[in-house]
Length: 178
Image (cartoon, rainbow, N blue to C red; front, side, top):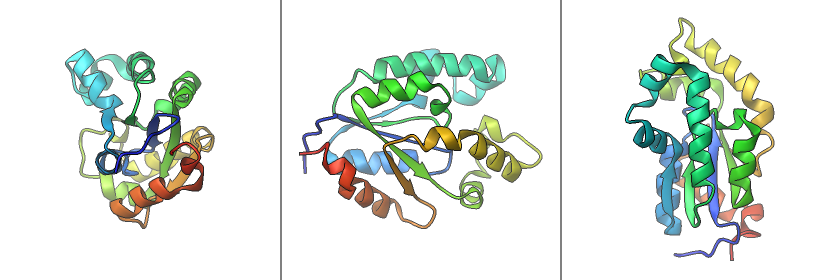
């Protein structure tokens, strides 16, 4: 099924472990759209993985690189764009992505995120003695930013297929899709 999207991109954002990458892959396949992952684009651009960028240069430098990548991917059309969880911390990132896309916030409860990501050592922001508390802290900081997204879907108790179906059938998205 190929859809013509008036705002031609669907942008997935949300906290780590909310399901952005997994949902993005299935959504892109279902809608026959190209998948673009901003974290993978950052890794291509720098030749380093995300963890190493954080480790060597710090979060602020990572966010600068991320903003540069957003400038480029925001110009693309007919894509599902999967973003890193902190991309919303810079208002200009979401503003750029929103110009040509509908921004979908995938939310998951802190304990669900914890269960999904605890064994993943590539998550630089979770290198903490209290990862669940760190998750809650970061979610509280980011919540006001995420709340400004066009669509919000709680993935805590849904399968990937159910999340994709909710996105495709979401009334506000239908106004952008013909």
